[in-house]
Amino acid sequence: MKDSVEPSAQMPQLWHSYNGSKGVYRSINTITMLISEITRSTPEAKASKKLCKSSTPDKELGASQLASCKSQGYRSRDGDKSHKIGSKRIKMGGKKIKGKKYGGPIPDYS
Image (cartoon, rainbow, N blue to C red):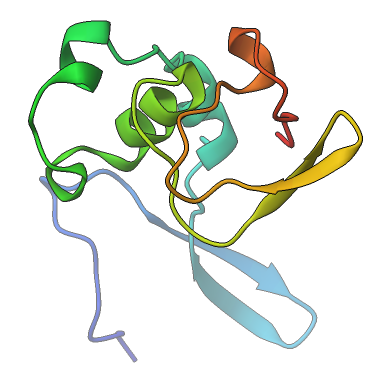
C-alpha cells in the first residue's frame, strides 16, 4: 500500500523510512540547524544615534532597535518597572536612563 504523501523529485528529501520492531516507520527529517545557531550567527548591532534621536515613532521601530535605543539612553522607557539605583528604588517609566552595557545603572538581565 502506497502512502498518499510522497516527496516530489524537485524537493529535497525530507522523508525517511526505517524498519522498527513493529514494521516500517516513515518520519520527517528534522531541520538540523537550531534556532540558537541562526540567532548566534547574526550579531546584535546597536541602533544608530541618528535613528534613536529621529522622530520615528516607537511603534515603527523594530523591537531590537527600540530596546537598543532605550538602553543607550536616547529614548524614554515605558511601564511601571522599577530598579534600585543607589539606595533608592526608581520607576523607569518616562525616563531616559542608560543600561549597564552603555555605562548606566540599570542591570543587564540577558
